[in-house]
Amino acid sequence: MTTIILIFLMSLALSLLLTPQAGRIARKYNFVDLPSERKIHSHALPRTGGVAIFLAFFLSFAVLLACSEHTMDMISDASPKVIYLTAGALLAFGLGLADDLRRLGPKLKFAVQIIAASIAYMGGIKIYVLLLPGIKNWYLGFFSFPITVLWFVLVINAINLIDGLDGLAAGVTLFASLILLIFCVNTERFLVAMALAALGGASLGFLRYNFNPASIFMGDSGSYFLGYMLAALSIMGSMKSQTTVAILVPFIAMGLPLMDTILAPIRRFILGQRMFHPDKGHLHHKLLNLGLTHRYAVLILYGITILMGVLSIIIVHIRDDRAALFLLLFGIAIFTGVRKLGYFDYLAANKMYEWFRDVTDEAGISRERRSFLNLQIEILKSGNIDELWINVCIALRMLKFDMAEMYLGNMRGSKRETIQPERTWTRNGFGTREDFCEECVMKLELPLLDDGSKVYGSLWLVKDLRRDAISNYTLRRVEHLRRTVIETLRKLETVKS
Image (cartoon, rainbow, N blue to C red; front, side):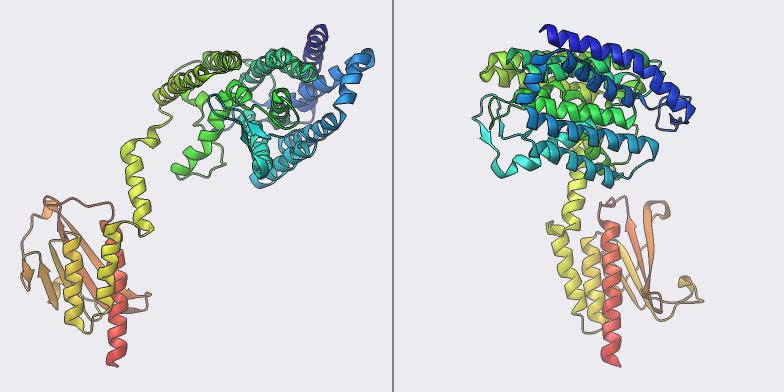
């Protein structure tokens, strides 16, 4: 335990010393983060704090190795994992540093993150089994590799995404590291506990300069390194043997950033935005939108992280069905709180129902779409203009239109009002006309253009909105109808010639 405290203090001291130096170098070479529409800060700040965190972590271990043979023996015993862990951490850090200096595309970043996770997997840092309360061990088998990679990518991007408020990513990392450290000490995984202590000390030292108002940012080099180390150490600290892992504890302890990371692409997908394009819809942005100050919002998120960490420790010690009950109650509380922030407005029941109806209609699954498709087929089978018109009117009745007129021939240079329609229909029958309230009807004039080259005429449609409102699919069906009529007219003209 003394060694763990010592490495924490060394990492803390090194981080306190190195962070200002990293800031000075960044300003000298103009490695600064400029203000933008989606960012909170109002002036340029250095973004090389991750370098100080990285150096503080590894230098504290180097000092300890030089002074402690016992530490050297522990690292030697775990040497394969340590070597692969270090290689993956270097790659993640290098990726983030390259992104800080020269912005990289999301595809390249994801590819390198997957490679870094694969390195850890090859070194034996992998998820073999999921241990869930109330459920027997779930052996992953073939799925061990994709789930391990998913865990790494998820945690790396979780820390990166919450790095939007001063002190938030560093503070969450600090608390998550301390929670996992307690868990590792209880399970006598002291080497992992030492690494978590070094990670926590480096984060705390950096937090001295990064808490609101920040004088330096960690950048992607810091968030990628912290995320990678948390992902790897959470697996190593949870291992019960060479073939099992309980990932539930770290998942809960880091629940805040993980939840935000999972919801972000879902939110963007539903809203029609690019899934990996930065935005201002994260949880910390929602708190700011409620009128909270920058510092108060961060403190609230700190509190949630600590609460989740305490819950994870409680679950470890309960080890029965009560753990599942704790999870359920806490999940309900989190969901309620997040919903109060307006985070799930886009998942309102009526909106989701309409979206689902649109999807089923577009895919041709809905009965209405299949019925209308049958009418389109009947229109295509029409042997002459009269049959065509009858079938068109049947389709218009299904769409609940009130009146239709068809004008055939080249309409260029003439106004519709100056010529007589060749076919007229109302909901009361063929050949009749009907007067409507001008303010209450929707009027559509559809040109029957064959790829814009030949004009067959036009369709004039009227719908009384007092009698029936426009459905979600009215205009889409009308366009399908127009194209079907054009195709039928082309076919009839070909047969006639």
